[in-house]
Image (cartoon, rainbow, N blue to C red):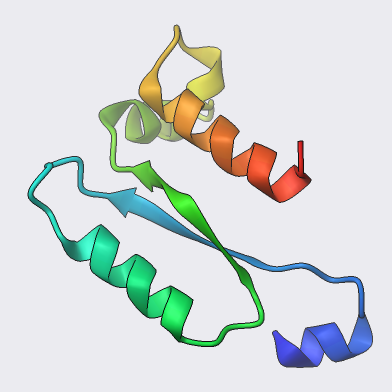
Amino acid sequence: MLEAKSINKKLKSFCVLNMCATHPKDKERAESLELLQQAGLKSTVIDEPIFDRKILRTSFSEGGSCFEVKANKSADEIAVVLQKILGI
């Protein structure tokens, strides 16, 4: 990333936790997020995760996206991440 940023000074990079467990007692997401924030990365760490959901696996395997299916949590999660990245 540092090499790419030396070539393109305006380049922005982001870290997103993907395929996180949906179980409320799972601690991996919080631990991973904390490690990323402490790592001193030159990337923006997005706090909102994308959880591991069946709709993602099903729609991707069929060449689609979760946005093409009725309202679902995955589409909402990804929309939040996109808004953070695009600054909307």
